[in-house]
Length: 404
Image 1 (tube, rainbow, N blue to C red):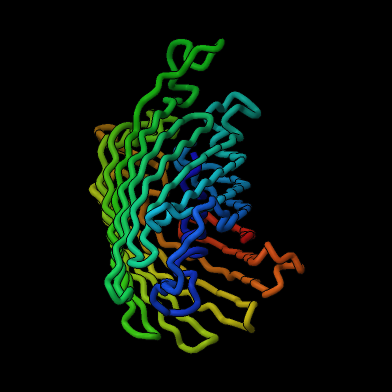
Image 2: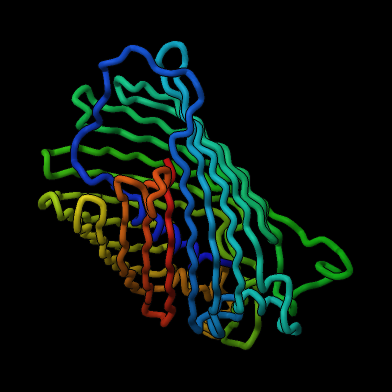
């Protein structure tokens, strides 16, 4: 229902957080004190609000034509607290709560007979909790995450494991993550393809599972005082209902069916991130990713961001990202599917396309606190504009406040 804007939001927040440090120094550990307080301490609180809007004319809900107008207001708050145990090891707890509310003109067309249906707007709520156990002397850590997400047509339960290992000189870091999401989707068909009483007079729709398993291997290296590099490999596997059944597909003979796709999907993204510190004022951040999956999609993504430090507490970060994708063999535009096809989609997210995403952020970290409030130590405002060759355009603006 919201694959496009979630992709852009995640991409945007990825740019927001990736390599946020401003100095290429390796991890430093304070070994001057043998005592650490064992009281629970609030490390920081982050508030992030983002508004996203998009428009286009290739809605998958109506077979690859029609409005893609959509807006979303997303809010997350995360609270990080920590304490040291009697052995001097640090336990960090990160609680995050997200609430998104969106309105979608395209998903409202699931039922063409109504002016406005339940699918025209929805609210998604997604809490998560992470516990990480770390050794402040070595920098090594491990942890576990639990998460939950719910909205109108699905519920998801997630679990994860994270591991970090550093070299003795702290210049090499290995990160490993495992995640699993067990989802239950409500099978909602377009109104004209429904049989029986599903969705009528309180009758329940059928449900179907969709399970996702992913891993991440990251190797980061401080080459010298100016240059850092990281290699990231993130294989994943999905099984279950991977088609969005309320998305229509029109065939060359004029017939209509609900989207049908294979029930298994393997994905392999491989990324390379390089940061070069040109001077105390300029940082050059680059990123490249190659993506391939068993549905025949291949993509190349390249990103450049150049944070510019105006003074000790104010910086500006323009960025640009380009993506080129070869689409799946299962895709065809409106009315061009062959009636003998086993799998089919008219979702332009899966088509051959190119896209551009560019914008800038401003970061404000005054020593006496933002607006003189000592606890509010960082304010960041970012704007991004997204456009792609299928004529879809979107804009996103976010505000990040950090309290310490």
